[in-house]
Image (cartoon, rainbow, N blue to C red; front, side, top):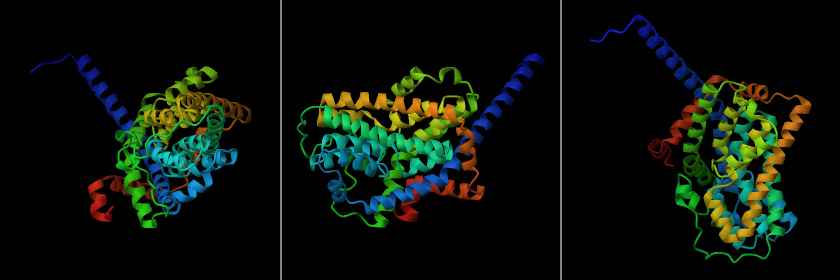
Length: 368
């Protein structure tokens, strides 16, 4: 049996204590974020199910037809609450484009739909504060409208659509098969029960792995990156551009991006950088870019990417300037919102959410 000098033993013991303390701190940070998010995520999924039930594709087709400014504006507003990720928005936008929607409305819909949804709106309010939630909603709308206008009026003649049966969507893009097929093929909306089944099965499956990964990363950032660590990398145009360049190719759904942005904000980045990440990350994916190039052409794709980069950076710069003038404290706003609900309700919502995320439990108990 080996014997160690007393100094080595005490150092080893102190390292174990420090490691255990770090593990507990990370678990506490992860649990705190999860408890804050769970009730609002459940509410968001419920509302998403109702929207799914009451929004027939024929209505979308009528509101988004043509290629004028009004259609682009309507596409941005209509797309925002719909419960679709970036990959899930592709088949719906393709169906709308081939049914008469122009380049501009199609692009606007393709950005606003995954950019923000009812679930991510609620999560942003509770994890980042109401100001960031408003900035995110307005930012997603501005990005969608500006990019839709630029693509619609600046990308030349209309590209020939691909064969009707070929959506080109990668099935690995999302967790469930719902992202690879249009969620609303019929002219009539599904019933409320069908819409809720979609929200708490297909949609939850699509986002659950991403949300879990986002919570883990947020817990790591809160635990291992002390406040103000990233202050030196924050502020100025270059930092905003860098965040946009990171977010555009890094596909993450809008809901999962929220806890990551919260962790980065607590680590010291500016609210403007957090906004750039929240806007640029969810709206792009390799599947989106490939389909956009094939459906609308290479010039439209170049305008699409350039517009997202420029618009999100300008919005982030504007938010930082506004906060600099007003002195608003984003982190304090978020902490105040998190205290609105009782702890027992947060625990109950988290347990329900975990059980719903387990497919065997969900199928056996609810028949979903």
